[in-house]
Image 1: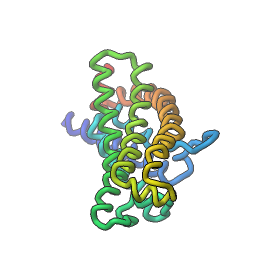
Image 2 (image 1 turned 90 degrees about the vertical axis):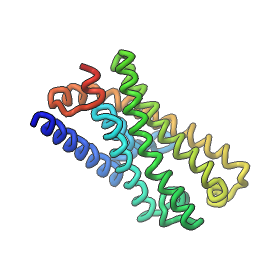
Image 3 (image 1 turned 120 degrees about the horizontal axis):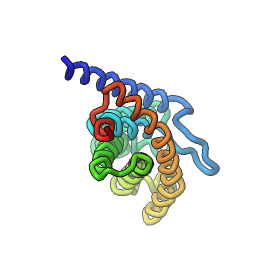
Length: 218
């Protein structure tokens, strides 16, 4: 009975984090306006959920993020939506599979990486004040690097056509995006994961809902 209550709390906690992701993905709250670009915050609940509830929860939350991205790029397509929506594919079924990997698969990796990284830090007894921002920064960079890296590897020609540049220029554009967008997003994630995670860890300890960092931090 005790284990069943624990499982119920875990499932409810995952559902609540998923609801936050859906809200962020569909409102301006999902973006932070920076001097040059807008940085997304939708991956932050994925990272925090992975810290609190484990890599499996992180994978579920990452999938929710990815599905929201897929739907958004389908319903309100942009210049690069072909890389995120199978319905916007310009290269048939192979392109659709690649788009699903980028929109959903890469986002699942955020939660898996953040969850296992937190477990590693707790086993190494890294102080939470250091571990939380490090997990936030690295988790965010996993998102940027895997998404942009996959676009380069899988859609270089289509990306070049969309940007009206030569294929040889794609690498520079990808690295420019990683630098201009990815690093500010990662810094924002580090700060927010530290601020929110420190409080939520204590809350989840009292609830007994955690399976990952919450137990490891006891």
